[in-house]
Length: 212
Image: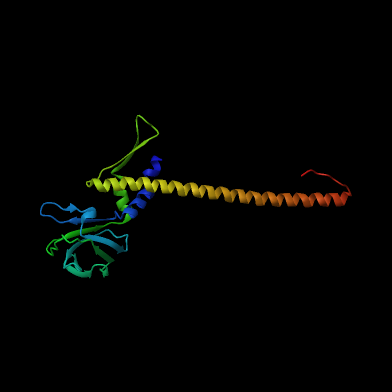
């Protein structure tokens, strides 16, 4: 159980499910703030997804944005695909009536591939057996945003359970296939034995009564 919970394959499933392969940062004068689900921007898609990229994004207005890469700028409309030198990206907004758009404010969109993000999370994730109850596991993850940490742990458990169900289902299917194959083999062997018996009876002109 511990080995599966700590596996890279499981964590990659979690990253994709929660879209944790990107972060939106609010650029501040002293430090940048990870906005998680509270930011005005949402990365809907990026291609190719394997690229590790950092984009500077600014609002032009409630419908348009601008991406800065080095000294170049690329304007895009929320909901549409914006083509960049080595990738294409689609951004959405989650603005409410209280949101004040500041086109001087810069946001950093950090996009990472699933494998590297999962590897980073595994370094901060631990699984231990409870001392008082060795059959129970204690899961812990270090995250600067408690809400994201809770979502992570819940998704890890959910994904683990789903993988267990899938594995048991595959085992059951393999067992049924094995049984079906054995039935076919036994039926063939029985038919062969019956033909051999009939041939023997005809050749030797004998009558055999065999209970079935």
